[in-house]
Length: 176
Ligand SMILES: [Ca+2]
Image (tube, rainbow, N blue to C red):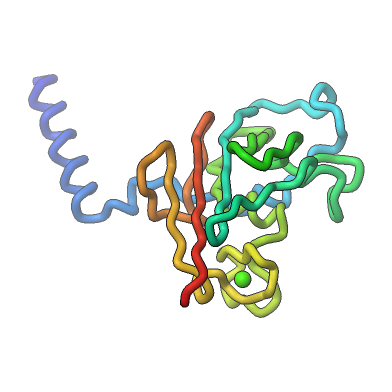
């Protein structure tokens, strides 16, 4: 009976997955970009989740460095740290993102771009679109965009939910 039950459950899972794959996908918790740790010291903020994806951004063949202390002591989170922030910068490798949240969230890549202020903006209809050059125009209109996660092509882009130790490479190439 257990085997039959397991088989039925497996078939049901496959059927749902084939018909409605998005039903099984966790949805991004976009509100995390507003989260602010009330302090500059990791010890005093009572964090339950703390993990580190890595991000590299290439624009027209050149690496765009993510500045050190992005998301730290910024407007709206003075004397604190955004739930997604950067300590150290690099010009050559992946930049380590620090995600520190009071409980488990599905943190999308785009939420970091909001913290970095390179997403959305007043003239972009959806504020969930990259704006790497901060000109208020969605980068989807200006660039061909591809993304690799741990060496594999990924098409979730802004909505990709980051995991510990991910190596996320975002490549933007100006449309000719
Ligand atoms: Ca843009």
